[in-house]
Image 1 (cartoon, rainbow, N blue to C red):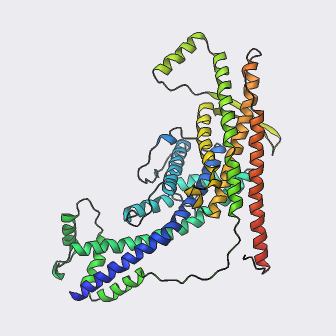
Image 2 (cartoon, rainbow, N blue to C red):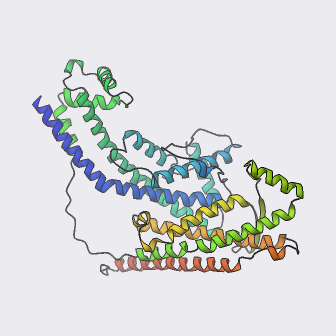
Image 3 (tube, rainbow, N blue to C red):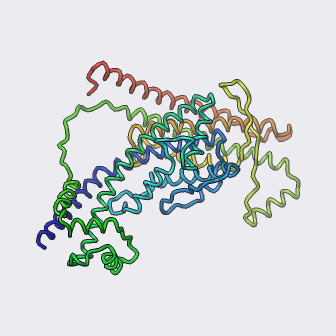
Length: 463
């Protein structure tokens, strides 16, 4: 009995030390990897939407998430493929955003059930072996869609796919590694709780059925793990028990690694921060352009409506009825092919998304002043991804606003032409912002490349 008490005390001490190490060291690394994973998928998701391979989910922003849930994974027919894939990837994007940016990361919170949820979410799409031959319906459909983009000649899309897939494959392995460490801790912590419940139970009664009854009596609603109960029986009541216990204590031991004295490495983080501040400054010109476009849309809408249609609009507003979709056919000049491309956009959905992005840009634009804990906690790799994504989003908004500017000017009558407001000054400001942010991004890449070349030549890069 004394030996058992000594083991329980040693196990509790080992778990306390392990928990402190996890909180101080490993959970922060896990969160960084999850943020990189989420950012990489977000880039892919935006590219799929841009290419028209999936549809935007109009209810995406309305869905409230309180706990992680893995999206639907059942099979679907070829006719259902577009709708199912659009809904599943939208949900997946939202779940990953919730996990990376709003989920709690604490040893007590991340129990076995929540660890399993995270693991299933990360493995929902097999990024390590993304193949049209996958047994997973969703993985197979995503692989086919990705191959479709790879067959195109869009260099930006090819780069997004290459970088994102490489990052998703790498971070999948890293995340699974951290989750395994957390799982091992939680298994032993649960077994310690179970030992408290079965304290004093004679060996003759030590079986899973009897132990489960005792557990249920004092832990109603708490999960019971038969496999872990079997482990406790072997560790506490079998001849192999002492060896198994020693092995567990060794597995939980925290190795005190003395920090190595390293030379301070050159950091180009400030260049990325400058780039984010520059691209974030585009929100002011974007907001001004958006307000002018809303006024132009109103001019065009009123021109086309009869008196009774205007009365109908007033009545709909009074009863809070959702307005009908406003679809415009816009024309873009494809610089790669030198041809004109036409695209239909839902104006109201575009403006909703644009306002959301403007709010994000406004927050990013103030990073230099400090106080942005999310930016401060990001790794350089994550900052690079964020800067590239922000630049792409502003470029996309610039292209659409430019097309809308031309569209409104062409659609109105001569009588209403004076009412239409142009946005050429705002477009020029946005374009200059993109150019300056891109210059800083290229400067960062050049500095990193130069540093790597110096390392290869054996030149000391420390400062």
